Length: 311
Image (cartoon, rainbow, N blue to C red; front, side):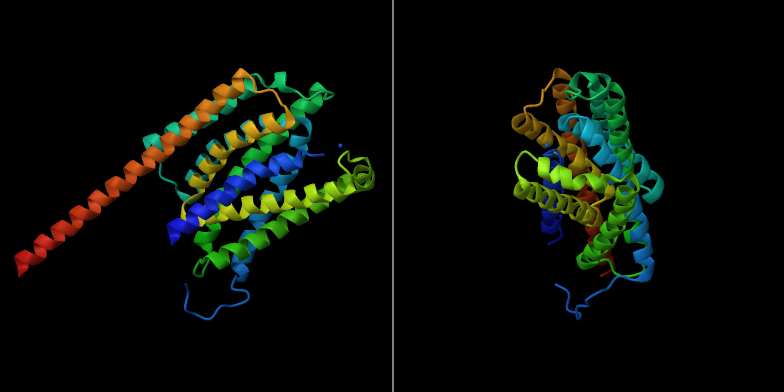
């Protein structure tokens, strides 16, 4: 059952991270009695802190994606895996294998290849200053999202209660509420809300489609956050980071198809490196699982011999 739920959360995470950027760019059995709320105050506090980090990451990402192409922003976010690996090691003592280190290296190098030639993909009408600010803010959002994943895992470990999937969703609710508060304060402080009426009127696809895009984006990003929390609960924060990095090529292809963005050689190289890193990670995981099974079988066999000898 855990494997099934893990797969479902992987799918939600992949859908959220792939669909969210595309929609945003469309702008111009437990037998105990169930409780309504099971989250404890301490867990609420930790989830709120994680939400502040998520809100800051959301704000940086919203600014960044406004000034750079979707395909470029998605590949910049591939650096998230390197940040995730670092924070996972520092916060939750994540253990690494040669394969996971190789995967992190390949995915990070793929993002660096893109960054060295990113200026070629600057959207029309964007100044150099705006473009590089967008690049910097997107990179900052990558680091903040990466920090968020191990913090969620740390929250599960610090929770002084049984961590069930229902508790995961409650933590997610607190997290997103906290993130929304951060984004709302930023919106009010910058005065962006004053432009919404004009933005609705000038939206090329019509008023109704504007709100369809807005609501669809919110739903897709909830898939991302809930899927990330579920993968962390049943897997690890590093696994969540790997899935995010691997789902990015889907966004790349979709952006080229729907927005007619250029798919340059650098993006092709970055895509290959990302897929290579993905297969490296999961090949290493499969080998680790096989080793664990062999150790368990040996232990069971030795226990059987000892029991038969004693008899």
